[in-house]
Length: 184
Image 1 (spheres, helix red, strand yellow):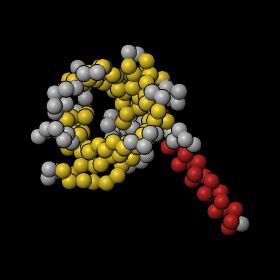
Image 2 (image 1 turned 90 degrees about the vertical axis):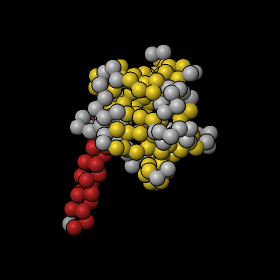
Image 3 (image 1 turned 120 degrees about the horizontal axis):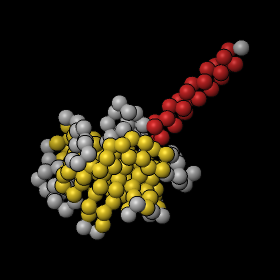
């Protein structure tokens, strides 16, 4: 009888946890921020490849504390990002400059604009009520961020409580998150 009770309790707790995970993935958390520093793996399809983004550790750079993220690409390449959050603003460390780049302002609003620390990329909040349909989820109430690079223009989408969920180039979906590794 003990075994049966323990097994039942275990199965109920797994089911409850799984439901919360699925809800977080597609529904996010409307009471949270658009750009969260998550301590979990994030699997991201980008065009015809993918990468896994993972929080690694804290790192000191120029006397400031950042959270190090690795983006491990299918090809084996690894890109490191260094992010920090201060007063609700998410910043990214820039090797090039004496200042950090704003990745996401505190309480972003439609029409907000900013540039990277080197001045090469411009960001503009297009909407905080956008929708995005991917092969995995149909998202609503997303922050839509237009990003103008020297080599093109992209639109990135962020969900409260989860962060980045996808990107478009010229209205074509080129990137989206998936709940598990594409290798599985």
